[in-house]
Image 1 (cartoon, helix red, strand yellow):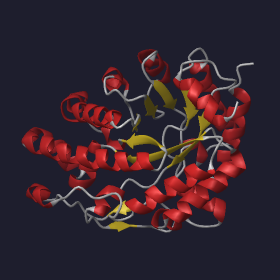
Image 2 (tube, helix red, strand yellow; image 1 turned 45 degrees about the horizontal axis):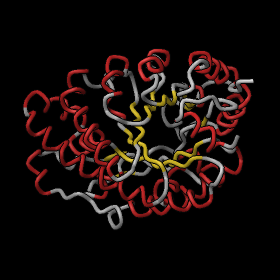
Image 3 (cartoon, rainbow, N blue to C red; image 1 turned 90 degrees about the horizontal axis):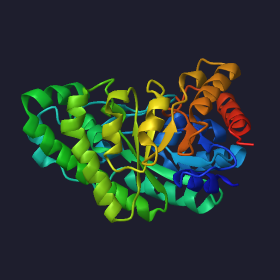
Length: 338
């Protein structure tokens, strides 16, 4: 099987020749073409070239075109700092004063900030890659809201001004839906990144009241446009796994702190489960540590065909490409059903 076939089989809950696998990479891929992370995040032509170089080298089953998580708010006017060798940083929050929400407009993905460059990068990679699935990554509504208001402020707002939080989330939904619709035109799959939506940061109550309804709305509205959504949430999600299934997303990309065994059971017949390999082993671990992580995940998922082996989150730009290569090799060897 080629990678694209393995992925399609996983979504059909059927047995492939081996478990599909891929690493989630962003700025680290810049090293494939002799550049640094800043070059990757500030020029999406470099993003495309870096991922194509990685694809030609290792042929992962999925290419996830991971940008930074500030494209949307930057397009609204936020200032972003781009370190040479690390992920971008947000300098300030546009909604330090909640009353400024009325002054914000939903950005046009075809003209605002770096969004058009990202759409073009997705199109280029999709046209060049025939044997693997290609996916784009944009922010979900809770991440957009957090990047506009600040995560701590937003959590406090859920108690002191819940009406504002709902208003902000409705605005953020429009941003996600509009960008998601534009991404479909590039031909790639869609993943919504919701890094701050886990119970590592918010309570299950906050998720159910202020996040879940808007996840459901984004998924529903994009489904109407024939866009399927994968949901990525960093951190611990065990207490909200059943709620995540209710979003209607076709897959959940989950981080290492959460129970893969539980998620596979909860999602059986409903969603594909992706991830759970610790990203720390790509920075401070050894090849043996990577193999241990792969074996752990494969052992949990061997009897489930709705699983794709992947890192629990994006690998840090400070990681090592040699360890990414080791992961791809080990995953291919150990994931075989024969």
